[in-house]
Length: 328
Image (cartoon, rainbow, N blue to C red; front, side):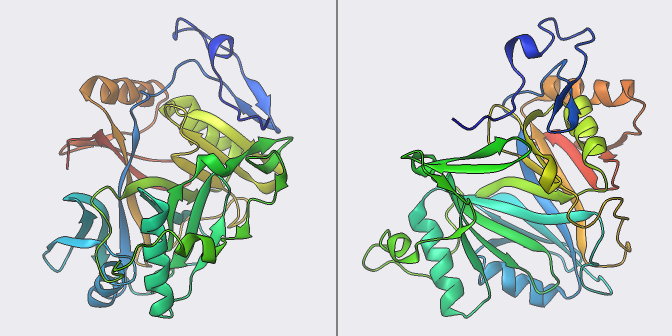
């Protein structure tokens, strides 16, 4: 069985208010004196783009999001009336390489059928994409015209598991056989999920939402200390050999991916370049928001209060809005 490093039971301080010490997982120290509310997730991701019209056409066409509002300065895109991606036109260049920021945002769909619809649309439009079988998820990867990374995926836990062991990623199928976790999707089988009459030019279903966000960070230990040790996400696993870690709330495989693939010590990108402007951590209620805010203050981290949100920057400079799910 693949081990997912989730600190539970005796691994955490049962009282939640004393020193639990630190464990070492694949070379990275982790400690769990508390956990963020299990109902926590991620919300809208805000992106800088060079040209609003081009980006809007991409996110509504190939991706399939719906325009919720567009005042020229901010294009709000979503599904089922909820914000998923917010575009900020006016960047003076594409995404800068080898910098901290967004690796990819990840939109989760409710079924294989809906993923098949997206991939078929992309292929019909000859838009470059990379359908990838992570065993427990089926994912497609692409980039917007400015180089912002995107994953669109469906949960397929019945197919097996993808986790961590001995400092690296490990995957096994439902029969227990070792898998790479990075094979191409069996498109013939996936397209078999489509029904006669299925259209490929329809928006994403209303159930589509932001499933996780994967970040380029400058140092793995530093990022785990912040997102786990202060914010309170559980560490689901560390692939030290790969320079990556997954953290989440409530046992999900990951709400945040963290990696040093842009280079150890990667600097922030130019503020006028396209790329991540901010992303959202959504907690269930004001009590959960207050608990996170208190830990940030206790850790000496600067917190700015904006309407409906507490705003911080992680150690790599990524801007985070922490808010209740009902807040906009």
